[in-house]
Length: 407
Image 1 (cartoon, helix red, strand yellow):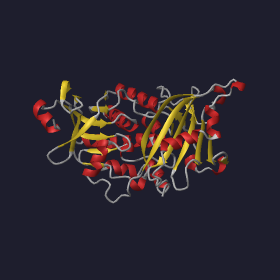
Image 2 (spheres, rainbow, N blue to C red):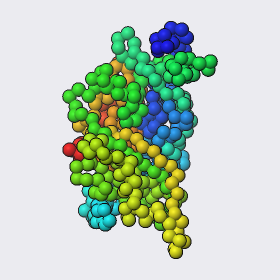
Image 3 (tube, rainbow, N blue to C red):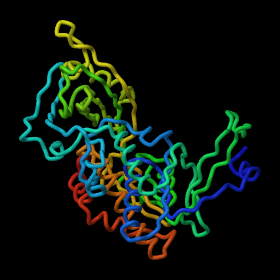
Image 4 (tube, one colour):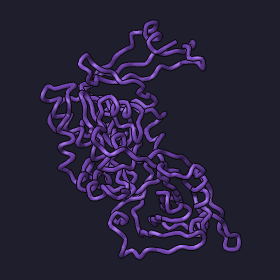
């Protein structure tokens, strides 16, 4: 049965009404929800907010192991330390190393550009940070719905976004409803905020429908492959950050790699490949495996019985797309009835390999614009105050500085 046939037979769908619906339970989406509730409490207003997360729990689809700049989090929740935010491991040392096939050259720290310096930042499990943020949101009165992916954008008679619908459940392999079939639910809102992450399914539809990328540089992407390992305490250096360039990449392929020493004797290893590579035989996953065999990296993972050092154990892995175009590829982020925040728009600072602080900041800016609009009796129009406030923010200045990093 087609989508329309299912609706005709089993509909209409149940609908729930909110002031703001947030699609995506990552740092950007949760920051949006938290800021909205903070503003409502500070101004003695009632704002209903719901966050839809496709994962079975908040943080389930977040690849853990990241360096987090706490600047935006401090603006959002100034007492995050007292509230137990899982930012436990400050960065203690940085290293930038250029690899050859068997050797390496370390760049002296005093010549490292600012974007590669991480003093004051934290090595975190981003999944744990997101779970903590979800708890903070729930305590403020945000409704959180894990396991409910938004599958369809809903529009009003004027073409503005009026909400989303969750996917139908209980569809068989043949596309027909089974005995356990359950029709999706509609969630209507005055404003809908899309925070799905890089290459979000609904975000891409919105960019195409409203031509949000018109007049912008084409967006570029990378593929990040990441693994989490538990290593022997004798080789663990809590807070140490290692970035590498060069081998195994050739000079025609954009990319790099990193190794971060987290707490609890864990390290996260990551390898980023620009998806504009020209070699049809190149496999980002295989290049990652080659990189792990370099002496500088293998040393952390292999055991040494003579010294009582146990081999490392891999405890997690994953991959995700990375939006790498930066400020020059940033689409228009607002349209009738909604907005894009975080990596759904492409706010990653590729020069710093950081996006969580940008995600939180854009969520806050969008929340302020939505709150002001709702309290002034508006709905389903364009939140122009959001991009205007972004252009005046420290985040815009940061991304402007890095605008030609990959050019």
